Image: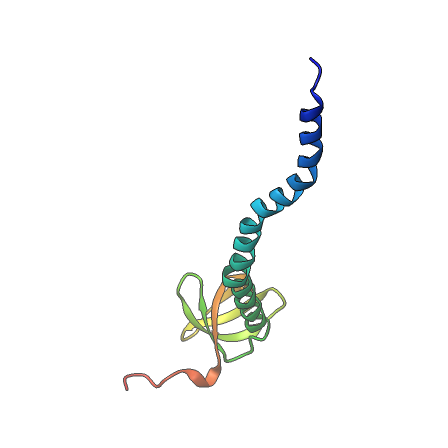
Length: 113
C-alpha cells in the first residue's frame, strides 16, 4: 500500500530521463519522415507545380495529350476548357484538368519520316 522511500526516490530520478528516452525512441521516426519528405513528397510537389504551369500556359496551336490518350491541336483556350481539333474539321472541348501533357507547336516531327 505504501511506497517505500527507495521506490519513491527511484521513480523521482527516472522521470527526467524518461523524456529523453522518449525523444530517442521518436528520433528514427522523425528521421524517416524527413528522408521520405525529401525523396518523395517534395519532388512530387515540384512535378505537380510544373504540370500546373504548363497547363495554365497552353496556347493556340499547341499540341496536347489528354489523360485518355488523345493527341489534339489547340484551337481556342478558355479559363477552364480548351477547344481542340482531334481530326480535320473535328473539334472537341476538353477540360483543362484532363490535359496530361502540353507540347509546344514546334516540337512535332514531320509525318512519315
